[in-house]
Every structure is written in C-alpha cells, then in structure tokens.
Length: 267
Image (cartoon, rainbow, N blue to C red):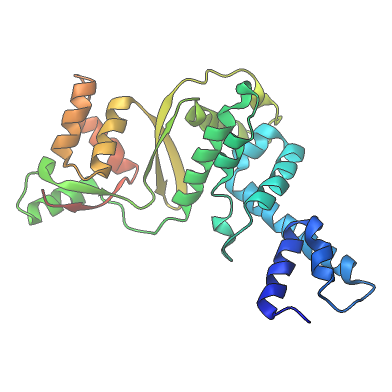
C-alpha cells in the first residue's frame, strides 16, 4: 500500500534533513537507479541553504569559531532544530540554546551570549518599520496631550531592544565591528583572552542599519522601566537611584539620537 501524500512529504522532509532517514523514504517510492543520487542533491541544497541562513544571522560567531567548526555546528543544529517556516530569516532562533546545551569549554562559554546578541541584532533588522521620534516630536506630542514632557510614557521603537550579558558579548560584538571595518581579520584574533565582564546594551536601527550601544546600568534600568510602561519621570527616578549624578538630559538626547522611541502614551 502506497503512503498517503502527507506521510510521503513528511518522510521526504526527514530524509532531506537526515541521511539516516533515506532508506525509510526509498522504501515507499518506486525503485529507480538514480533516486538516492537525486535525493542527495536536494539534501545538499538544503544543507547549503541552512548554512547561508545561519551565516547571515551569526557573522561574529562564525568569525569566532572558524568556518569549518561553524559548518559542522550548522549541520548539527539543523538536524536538532529543523526549519519550521518557509521564511529562512526565522531559522536559527534556538542557536544560543543549542550552544548552551553543548557544554562548551568554559573559556568559550561567552559564545552563547554572542549568539543571543546576534539573534537580537537579526530580529532588530527585520523588525516592523516605524518613524523614530525626535525631541521636537516628543515635545509636540506631550503638548497635544496637555502633559509635561516627563509625564508621557514613551513607546519603544519595534527595532529597539535591551540586552544584558554576563560575559562581555557587547564588547566582543563591538570589537568585531571595528576590526572588520579595517578588512578581513584573522578569525582567531578574537579568541585571544578578553575582559569578559558583565555589560549592558541597547539595540536600535537607523536608516536600516542596526546599532548596538554599550550603556551603563542607570540608563539601562531607565529604558527597562520605559519598556515596562513607565513615564520618563519614573524612568529617570530609577536611573537617579542607581547613580545620583546621572545626566537626565544627555540620556534622553542619546535615546532620541539612536531612534529608541516610536510613539508616546499619556500618563
């Protein structure tokens, strides 16, 4: 009895992802001398597609681990976490989790945080587009609502995201941008000992270019409050509690320059 179409499609997908599933697929098909070779072509194309998708989303990680290791990692990852969408920009979301489960050598454990950051950069690039507010926009909207500027509740831009790393991922990512801007670096250069201390960052997108900004804890805590729905006044209070001389005006200017806000809500 021939398999139903759905069962055949499922068997074909498994065989494309895992060569060990090929015999099960071939048993349900009409014998043909070239079937195995033809299936290998599909499997090769699938593997190349998965690799390109991960290379696009994780360029810094690829530089850190090297091309050969990255390719092997991509194959193992695709086998454990096959694509669940026709949109390949969504493939790779679980790579940080995959690395965390891999029990890496402790000196390379920061790869997990680098992967988390790179996926957030990837998400920020494909986030919904929206105009970013300027200071003039912010003041104007507050006036329209009949409220003081500090009383409004800013809404983060869809591309604006907060990031926390306990192992220096922001510094590693930023260092890679500086080096790659000078030409192709020796990919082992970034494996040298680094000061992998805790750092905080905020991601934004300006003219479709994602930026990662390393910020201090008071500013990060304030943006965290805004993300949770707090007003500017409430957010600044949290920042000032963390650092009494936090420059409120400078912080607000930076956030606006980075395009962090897309709208405001009344208190």
